[in-house]
Image 1 (spheres, rainbow, N blue to C red):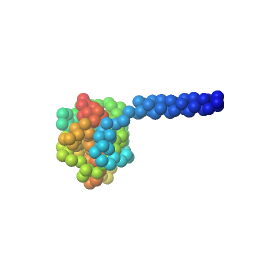
Image 2: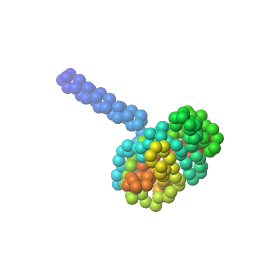
Image 3: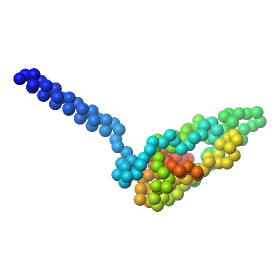
Image 4: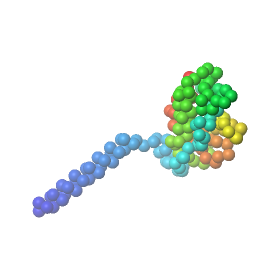
Length: 183
């Protein structure tokens, strides 16, 4: 009889531990409301490997044309015999320390890595709110142009689209706004 009570008590204790673990995990990793909204609407979400495929050291310039702010980050022309990585940076025409320029490029690169993807054709009533133009060094002379879009029905979702890519990349709205407000 005591064995049954012990088994019952142990079972209840185990159940309490499992429930507490699940609750603690949900609090530590809260659900993403954007993903929940998309899933509720039957939209398929895939993990993203990132939209920006460049090596940060190859970036010559970034032009950001946003709804509220525009800026240009460009590498100063290197002196003869000087490597590109040793040249300085200009932000809206003013000198910028290399560490700050590299930090901004890294933030932009990371912007496209954390969200999911879906087919660009699945976006509905999207409004283009900006563009990002990235010029790279090397053989590729054509700049890469990315469109920043939001859906009028879901303004909390920010998407980046690349010409010729069938996917739209979901990005953090907070990270997007932080990049747009750079001074």
